[in-house]
Length: 186
Image (cartoon, rainbow, N blue to C red; front, side, top):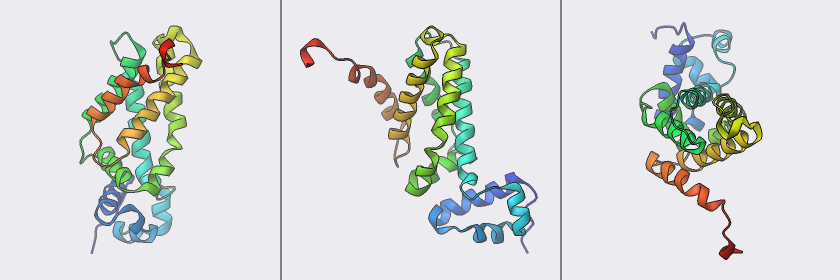
C-alpha cells in the first residue's frame, strides 16, 4: 500500500515525476489522485487544478527573477533583465520542482499555452522591480515595455526543447539592434 500524501509538496513530487515519466497530456487527474493515495476532496484541498501542479512552480520562478532584478548591481536595465533571467535559469536545478516544471513545459505544447497566462503576473512583478530600482528613470510604461520584451525573449528561447542560456543571452544581446532603425535601413 502507498503512503498517503499529506501535503502539497508530496502531491507535487508525485505529479511532476508522473508528468515527466508519462507525458503531461497522458496523466489524468484521476491518475494523480490514485498515485497520491488520497481522496478526490483531499486532492483538491491541496491543488485547485492539474495545471497548477506545473504552473505554480513556473510562477514562483517569475518571482525569483523579479527578486534578482531588485537585488542587481547592474546599472543598465536591459542588462539587469538579461542577467536576472539567465542567472535564474543557470541556478535552476533540473531535478528541482521548478526545473521539472520547465522540462514538462518544454515537452508539452498544451501546458505551454496555459503558461502564457503567467506572463501578466511576471510582467507586473518585473515592472515593479524595475521602477523600484529607478531603471528607465522610474518610468512605469518604459519599464513595462522592457519587461514584456524580456519575457517574450525568454518564452521564445526557453520554452523550446534543448534551449540554453547561451541562446537566451544572444537573443538579449541582439534585441536592441533589432528595434533600432538606422537611416540607411528605411
